[in-house]
Length: 111
Image (cartoon, rainbow, N blue to C red):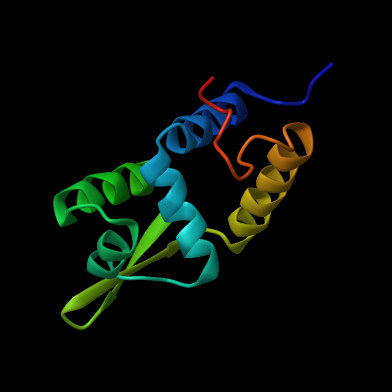
């Protein structure tokens, strides 16, 4: 018998929804390294500031990132440092299960 509750399942679903969008996934992976301000994230990921704002709002709503005011700017960081470890483990698992997924010469993920 599983000890997972409905709220646990909801939390996993929110994580899955967050990771279902490549921009949100890239944001989370970037924030594993260090907190960042939205404009820097937008530039690094090649998206508009509006797109970044929308995606960060979604990630905040999911409880995955938090906004840290710093004077006139705001920084974003992972809501829990353990999330960075989990994302790293998930990436390792994906590469283990599908070693050719993102090999040079083309990604087979969308095939």
